Each structure stands twice: as structure tokens, then as C-alpha cells.
Image (cartoon, rainbow, N blue to C red):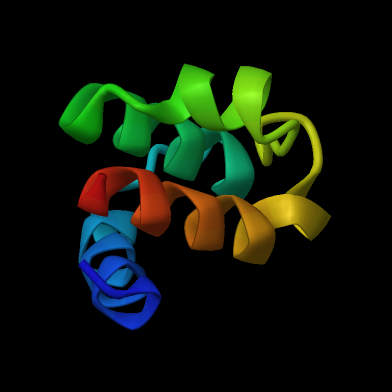
Length: 69
């Protein structure tokens, strides 16, 4: 899966984002629930968007690479 394909998938999923979650929290949880790799990205690539939306792009880049592995 390319990063852009993952971004497109996330954009579709964001329609269902609860208002109490930040975008980064939702994306992290979505990746974790759908692909079960969010913790690997956080612990092995040292990137997490859960607490900081500034890391969303890098998180998705790392996640797309891990999905392809």
C-alpha cells in the first residue's frame, strides 16, 4: 500500500471520527485496529501521532511501509 492509498483510506474513515478525538488519536487508533501496526510504528520507528497531530504525515509514511512488509 502506498502512502497516498493509506491517506485516501484514512480520509474516508475520518468521516466517522468522534468529536472527542483529535485527528491524530483517531488515525493512530484506526491504524492499530485495522492493521495492528501502530505500536510497531511508535516503538520501532519512534513516530506517534496519538499525542501530536504534527506527526501524522510521518506516522502514515512509516505505517504504509510496515503494511507492505
